Image (cartoon, rainbow, N blue to C red; front, side, top):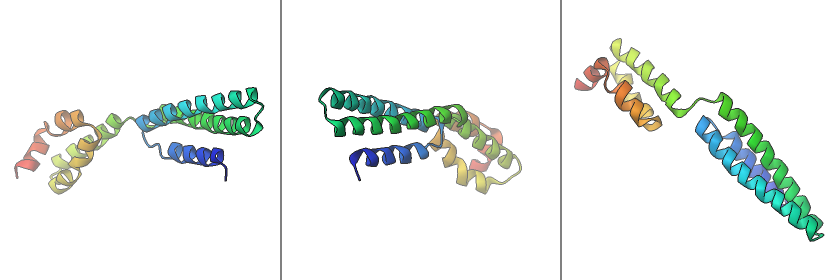
Length: 135
């Protein structure tokens, strides 16, 4: 397997692992840099009359452009980490109001890991959640 194919597969795996806006943004940046390198290899190979370098550059550039396009779609449709944290925090506040403190205590780390500000302001400042932690 050539290096270009291996790189294309690696980029595809990275782009398929985007679950949030931020992940898509990071993958798009990586894909854009790899696209520039691939196009540079294509131009260099063409100027040096080295067909293998030129074809490798075209393969890497094409795969990278597909990754960038997929990431752009991900940035449009996937939620931001703060949105996910807000959804979970809201669910936990509802559970705390219903008296299900075990679930609130068990899942508070999910909110904290996603967004510290949502954790502090939305979740921990809620009176019903505070009652759960006071017990």
